[in-house]
Length: 469
Image: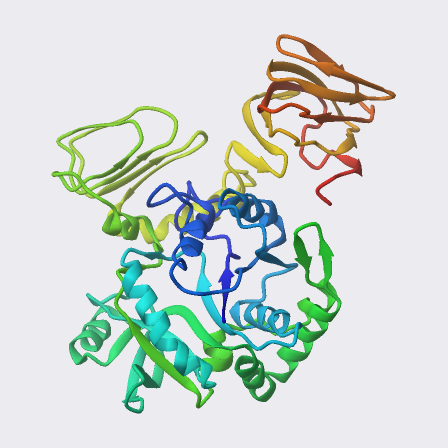
């Protein structure tokens, strides 16, 4: 049985302003009607497999849970990394978790933020790799390149495997090359892009760790043994895990083992590592423009224009990337999009919040949109899902005025519980214990006006929370 392991950690800065620290690209709909995480899971249809194991950061846990709920995947497991330690320890956690029931499944390790347009070819490569992995080899998938690329690492193939098995031994792994070197790789026909996807038995990976990275294995084993179940999540023990060395699986294992095998994959793959990469794989109009949202163009060509919330009009431009969100607009030349990370660094250095989250922030109970703010006030539009409930909480520095726009709110305010319906309001004084719940069958929408000397999100004292925060 194949056990999918989907790595959904990481933050990413190269697709800002869509990708933010609290909502990175694996949770975005970049190339279709599903998020990249959801597309990764759906890609497994047609391959017999166990429920997937998702590895993510603790602060993204409710995003993952909600996106799994939308796919009606109630039996998936979610491992929460208390701190990122790179891919080798993350996969070790999944392998140790997989063998706890006495089984030894074949792990199929996938990244949640890759695009694969030829799903049939993807599945064919997985099925070709299965007997190799079952036999104890450590399989990595090499993408058949269609052009020299300096943004990817490469795998040089070695000898073919024995007859009946489709794969090659690994001659070497190569870091990201310059253009001249990459062109030579492509001309030779012996080099493949390093996809970051793997397949091996859980026991085979753990055996390799025991030989090559014993300290890493010991730390991960202790972290799993001390893990705790919390709602739908498995919380890895923080103290044990932060003691683990931080290394990629390539460096820690694949470059050192004599069991590495490369299976080619020609599946129109991309890691969508930049806005220009997204333009490459997007559907374009007759002018070469990839357009999403409310966009009007005049004398515009070869550009990516993404409008989220308002009309974007362009005149006389070429080879640009324009991305509009509620709180930020990016305009960049397509040849310079790798420098978007420098903009994010500037935002972070200035103490601004636009690198952390959007105006719209998702919570396990729903979401809120910060629609206005001033020196001593802030206005939010809050949406609470049916059955959703905010924590029982108190604020030291702000009062709140709630106006219900649609639906019905069940309010706990000090020692009283009452309902507030459309066109009604209620007031929460500073220091008063309170909570908000949607007891109905439709979303609850309300306007919250905060006023006070400090309006930060950390001015919350929680007394009770159904989501374990």
